[in-house]
View 1 (cartoon, rainbow, N blue to C red):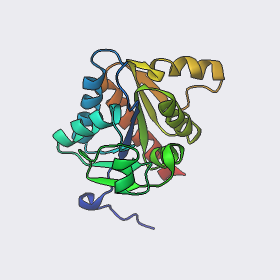
View 2 (view 1 turned 45 degrees about the vertical axis):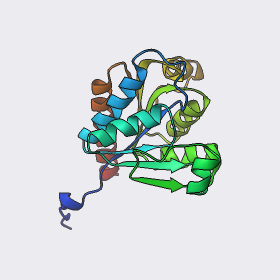
View 3 (view 1 turned 90 degrees about the vertical axis):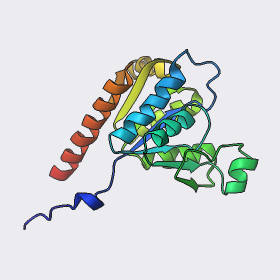
Length: 196
């Protein structure tokens, strides 16, 4: 049976989730600039950025992606736009689409990581750790921007003491190099799925 060639005009784009702390007060200098650059690089690579539709690191990544002409989709913990803004105090800007999940933070985290082809972690706290472990268990390609503080700088140690290997996680302090590694991992996973 002949395989049908995909018309690239209608080919689905890869989706990359940027996970990181909603509060950046304690992050090292240069971290928000790196998060913005990650968003730009995702957009320039022709991929869609997926965020938790929140403040902090994901917001900066969304800003970078939109400035580079990219597409940004947010998954909100809130059940409506009114709750997103009024109850959760979350922003609406720099997103092309916000999906109101109504599942709170933990439910949103599951949908967020599952909706992406890969997850990039930049400076995080507990919620970011939750997103990392969900993606790890789901065997998703993951990139961790090291040198940005918080859970990002602890994940290699956590994986070591957990005795589960690195899964599909790669670590790099350079945004450009990290995104190249993520793109390579996504392509590798796609080829693997095509063979199966």
